[in-house]
Image: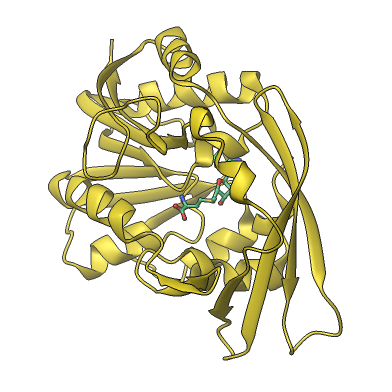
Length: 257
Ligand SMILES: C[S@@+](CC[C@H](N)C(=O)[O-])C[C@H]1O[C@@H](n2cnc3c(N)ncnc32)[C@H](O)[C@@H]1O
C-alpha cells in the first residue's frame, strides 16, 4: 500500500515544491536547499551513464534535470503512483513506466539503476523489497551499478519529526503551505507518523498517516546479498565520507555478485 503523499493529487502537486532537488525551503524557520548535497552526489553518476533506470522515480525530477542538462542516452523512470508519474510525463523524451521495478521486465539493459529520496524506506514489506531487488539485479548490465540511500536508524532522525519543526514552501499557485510531522509509534524498525499540511487556499488542513522503515547497515547488506548483489562502496554522507555510527545516511553502491 503506497503512502497517500504520493497518491492524493493535492499533495502530489506540492511534492516538487517541498522535495525539489534545486529549490530552497524554510524548515524550522531556517532556509535550506534541502536536497542540494544529494543532487550533487547523484547527478554526476546519472550524467556519466549511457542508460539509467530510476526506481521509484516519483515526479521524475532527477531524470528531467539530467535531460535538461544534456543527457543524450536512455533515461527511464518507474513508479507505482500514477499521480506522481503524471507530473513526470511533462517531459516526453524520457520513458516513464507505471508500476514496480519487476513490471519493466528489463534484462541487463542499464548501466546505472538509482533509487533516490529514501524509496527503500517507504517499501514496508520484506517480500516486496526482495522482489524489487531481484528485478533491479536483472535490469543491471554486467558492469552496471545500483546506487540508493536509506536513513541511518542509529541517528534516530524521526526524533526531530516534531510539530514544532514547521516546513514552509510555496505551492505552484503561490500560496504558502506549512507542514509538520507528529510521531505516532516506533515499533522495531517501523516508524509511523502523521503529517499535517495547511494552506490558505484550502478549507481546512490535510492530515495523512505514513510509515517508513529504518533499516540498519547489516539489514541492507543482507537484503542485497539475498538478491545476488554485492556492496562495492558505502558512504554515510553525500560528500562520500565513510559510514560511522553517527552518519545520517547509508548510501550504497552495489553491483551484480
Ligand atoms: C519519497 S518518494 C521519492 C521519489 C523520488 N525518487 C525522489 O527522489 O524525489 C518515494 C517514491 O517511491 C515510490 N514507491 C512506493 N512503493 C514503491 C515500490 N514498491 N517500488 C518502486 N517505487 C515505489 C512512491 O510512489 C514514491 O514516488
